[in-house]
Every structure is written in C-alpha cells, then in structure tokens.
Image (cartoon, rainbow, N blue to C red; front, side, top):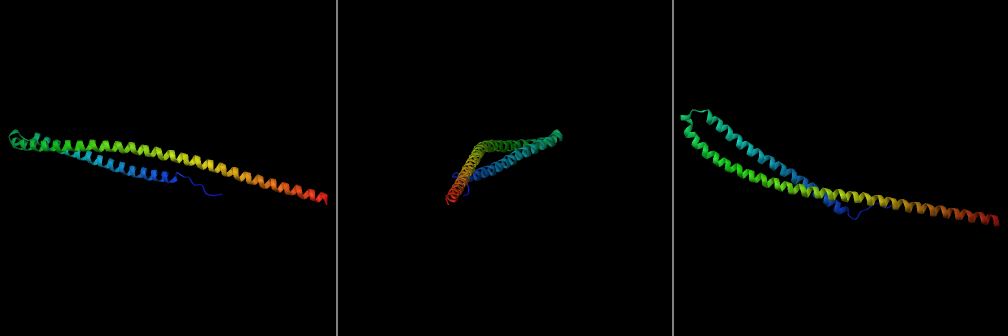
Length: 155
C-alpha cells in the first residue's frame, strides 16, 4: 500500500510555522508590556517615596526642595504619560496579534481535522481495494479449483 499524501500538507506546515511565530511575537509583546508597566510603577513609587520624605521635613527646610520636587514631578508625570501611551500602543498591538494568533490556530486545527478525515477516507478506500483484491483472488482460486475438478471428472 502506498503512503498517504495530503495535497494541503504544505499549507498546514506553513500555518503551523506562522502560529509558532505569532506565539513568539505575543510572548515578546507580553514581556514589553510587563517592562513598561514596571517602569510606570517604579517611577510612581519613586515619586511617592520622595513626596513622603519631603512631607517628613520641617516646613522651613523643605520649601527649597519642594520647588525642585515639583519641577521633577512634572517631568516624571510627562514621562509616565508617555509610558502609558506606549503601554496602550503595546496592548493594542498585543490584542491584534492575539486575534491573528487565534485565527491562525483555528485554521491549523481545521486543517488538521481535514487531514485526519482525508487520512481516514484514504484508509477506508485502501481497505476496500485490499478486500476487492482478496475477493478477486478467492474467486480466481475457486474458479481454478472448480475447473480442475471438472477436468478430473471428465478424465
């Protein structure tokens, strides 16, 4: 019996490769999101700690540092907003990649199901051909035996 070959196997292979690439891209995006979130939390934590330290000082000592802190906090807030914008961009990109990944996965699973159906049909047809060959061999053997008996009776 010849091996089962499926015409769409190459499409299935390429779809599987694409799914793996998208999974890697999703993982990279998730890591980038985590890094940006961490940077935002870190900057906010630094601001909060500095503000608490500033609040613990006496009024006379903190006035000069308070002006510096206010300038610093404005720049940090601008950086935090920039990081938040980057986070939104990364999350939108990740959402798009996730959708693309899900479609690719669905396509791969559908192709695999169809391949298994085609393989099952191939095996059924092969079994039918094998049974037909066996039946034909049996008929030929029976016909030979019948012919041999007739010849033997005539002799």
